[in-house]
View: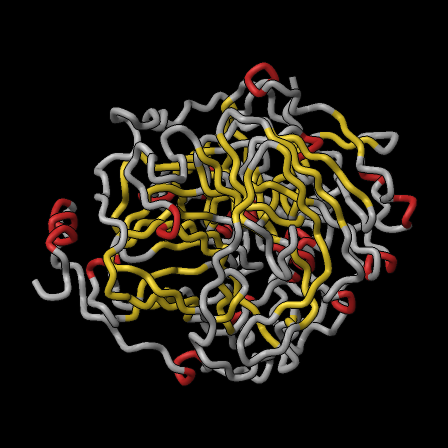
Length: 596
């Protein structure tokens, strides 16, 4: 059984897949990576793959933490000089991995100390509430994505923190063990700030999944647990990032989304990492702005998905690929003990780019990083057949709840092709500041029927809550729009979709069947999710409480949000939006309240 350990063979056989392993393919070269050079797209200079080691991001933990967003300079590749970036907490790009513990409240003092913006010239002043002042006094808003958070600490897009201003955010520790992440969420410039570097991983631990060698689930820990923050970019020869992707969009105009041509992992382009011959736990987040990725290992080595957005699955899912939309996370076990010392394997992608980018000539960005197998033995634990429901394990996931309310919502954008006209993207055909918002009642279970009327996927994220994905079904989009003419933008449009379904409801992939906070909606489909909206008594805080932005916003002359709050400068509620960051920056975001 050359190349496969007896332990791994037995493990794979238990899942009926002992014959699934195939020989490793050769390493990628530059000729594999730089292809499809469309004249309409900007391109990075040729760069050597695997020239940099994968950064291991530092870990911070405790009940009283402090992070600042600051200006810095970062080198993304050994052959590129440092260039302006943003970072959190002492890092020159991205932020440290924050660890918290289930049941343990904690606070974060967040401070904006940025000076200017690396992409100041790319800001579009025509977007919602933008001001020229934002170019050199950039507002930020830290959102702990997927966390169950009081509204005043949620990182609301109107909860702006300006340079020189601090905000204390309080987190009650209600999440069970999961791989979350944090990122900037400032109104109309979320992509600008995240692309500049304002993102980081957040790992929640509990008594079952402690993150240490004492964890009850037998999971790899320490050096054998690796957070991977995946992004894609276009680089300039001077080492700076190009947030513009194509020649059809002038600088300073909003872009509806574009792909990169280099993969970035933990802040380095196509890095390499040495791994021992054993089991590794990879905590992966799609922290990109636009692309959906179909991730796989270059030798088609199978791996186990043991968790997703909100925590562990009941049982591991054995697969050779996983489709990950922006903001989605997966918790993965890979056994490099199946490989021989000296072998290399790459984390790759073959997902076609979304329609808008493809129309300009974009091709899949194929590569993220390389794993080099060393001779030493690594973690030798077993993959369990269950991660919930057994002795010393968390309880099984509850069955999907029965809805008492049906709610149809729509995801919309025009098809403009190569037009320079700025398209309008929206939810329910409304502007962000429309008063016609969703107002689910506390304690109710709702089925949201998310109708994607566009030609692109859109990952939809709901703040505060977790949900279960029921499935997706194709619809007759032509009949849907013909029978229900869309009014002018600003008038709600979310017709019932039931009679327009043209096929059965396809269940979610096994690895996305757990609790989620982001769901990928496919073009021309309805995606059904089940959401229970918690009560104030259950949460220990009122999800419908009003709150105010920290002082320093209006005084500094930046965004003017007063007209879009609940009155007298107060804010209320949460948001739901597309997590293609350009889309949420230009009206594909709505507020919602969880009312008594």
